[in-house]
Image (cartoon, rainbow, N blue to C red; front, side, top):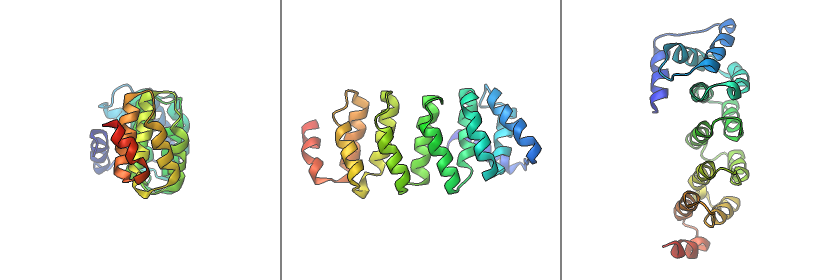
Length: 194
């Protein structure tokens, strides 16, 4: 459990609740949040996390206007909704280039923990593998590598392509994914990388 998730869990266990009228104020608190340790920010995120599916769309819409700290906390709000709608909201955050790269990478990690076998997520990750940022591209390839053991052709193809990426981080993640996939076709690539 991440430190932020732990703090939110503690706040939730303290009995924080919010009515519908307070949700807008809580989202506004995340928009203005500058410190992940701020009680105001943590309380707002905890209340939003308890609100369930109705908070997904307004939180997602506000995320591009949030500080990095607010975006991190908003991601935990999205992750607090363990439904397909919550998963779609997290995927939307991972795809949103207006968000901080760190937050987008965190969203990819949440997707892997949440829905390791969801084909829609896998196909979206295949599309995201062309990202311009090498750091984000490496995170996408890592996420695909975590899904490679299923042997899906589109995942293995992307991993093979990424093994030739100009960025070393991307190549390493691709090789790890191919190694975990135990794909016989990729064997020569792995041997050549030694």
